[in-house]
Length: 313
Image (cartoon, rainbow, N blue to C red; front, side, top):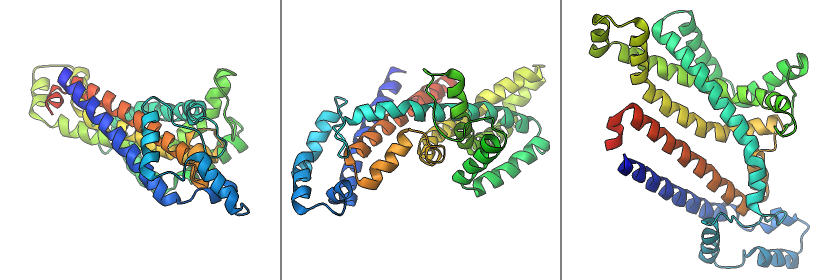
């Protein structure tokens, strides 16, 4: 098990280095000269040259990369080119907002997806199973921002159950915090609920037809215990989808945060992309990859516990 953990940690570190390094060079290639976006079209050549010198953009690209990487490994992502504030502090202020929405959406997807998937697996072709198939077609045909707008219209404007926009910190009000993340979380989780339910339903049916399940029934085990064994063997694929959904929800948070006006890393990513604020983009990329590595590492640990054969990979 120790070897298994070490392998996953090493692969996670390599992924972090490769992704951030690739992002650094791609961002510099795509942005080009960032001074125009930072200063505006009315800036003079002298002002642009002064800004390039201040942000170090006039240095060789490899020197810039080494300077950023040597500081990033210590947690220092530099300063923003827009406001010259530490990138780490700006991200730290916004990460709790995004994580609140994404974690809540993941929990909703996990709980409802498992419940629906088990019901559909126990009763294939039933009412819930048919509703799941219809929902999968409808939800994947509709864009995420449209679903968010519909939720705002119904539950925030017409029924006034939740606020339409804005974010309330849990330090200010726990109830206000839950109400402010409710609609964004539901909007993010709908597609994930359907995917997890379908994956678990298919895995449940596949495992339920195997020989060892028929043997368990022949031995007289109760339906509840048989269902528990089937669910445990069908869960790895659903867990993998859940981990992928978490990563996908981090990306989907960009649209949701814009619609609901949430001050998370999604809105920060959008503003930094518009003006070419490369240090902020690199810091956001590094933080996102860290989240991905942590989630995949935890997934590997859970899968290794559920299925010991995974540890030998």
